[in-house]
Image 1: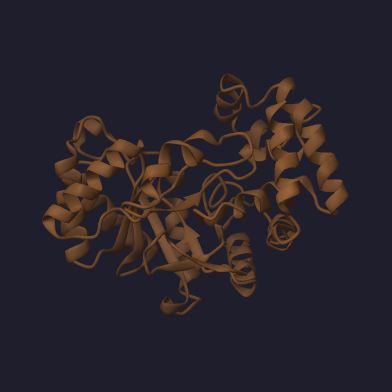
Image 2: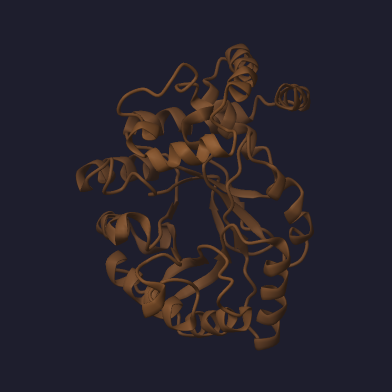
Length: 320
C-alpha cells in the first residue's frame, strides 16, 4: 500500500480507502462492518470516510463503534456535513449553525474528539462563502477537525474559499472529494487543474466503479439484489447521465479485453487506472463484503503494470 500526501499538505493517507455510503447500516450490519474494516486495516488501509447524511447518521455510528478497536494515531477519518434534516429549521446546508452543530453531532456518533477532515458535502448557493469560512475558522481553532475540504464544489468557489481562509488566518481547503472514474473525468482532469498548485489540493475520489458499471455485472441487465436493483433512484440517475447505456457497454467490452490481457478483473483495472493520476490522494472503495474488498485491494498491484502504452490504449477505447 502506498501512502500519499494530500496535495501539497503534510497529511498522508492510504492510496485506497474505505467509504460507507449505501453500505454501512444498509447492506452491512455492525458485525459485517467490523469484519470489513479490520480486513481493510490489516491490508494497509488507514483512511475511512463517512458523512452525517449516510443512512441518517447510522453509518457514522457503526463506523465509530469499530474505530474504537484501533489506535487513534493509526488512522485518518473524515465526515461530511450538508444533508441532515429540514433546511427551513437550520438542519441542512452550510450555514455556520449547521456546520458546527452538524459536526458536533457527527463527533458524538463517531465517539471521537475530532475528525482529521471535515468536508462541506456540496456547495450551498443559499449560504455566503464568508459564512462557511467563518464556521471553518471556529471548527479548526476549537479542534473539532484538523483540516477541511469540499466535495463536488466548482473550482472558482474553492479558490474563493482558499483566499478567504488565508485572510482569516486558517488553512484553506486542502482536499476535494469528487466523483472520478473512467466514465466521469472532466472535473478532475480539466476544471480542477488550476487548484493542484494553488491552494494545492489533493483528491479523495468516490465511485471508482461508476456504481458498479465498471465491474461488468450490468452489461446484460440489472441482477436482482444488486445495488442498482436495490436503489432505483441511483439507477435512474445513471440512465439520465448516459452512463447506464448500450454505448457505454460497447466500450466496456474493450476495457474487459484489456483487463483479461493484464490478468486482472475490470474492477481492478478501473481502480488502478485512477491510482495512476498523481493528483489522487486516495480512491474511496465502497464494498459490501470482505470478498469485494479483497478483489479491489489487488488494484494496487495492477497499478504497477499500467504502462504509458496501456494508459493510451484505455483512452483510445473510451474515446471511441
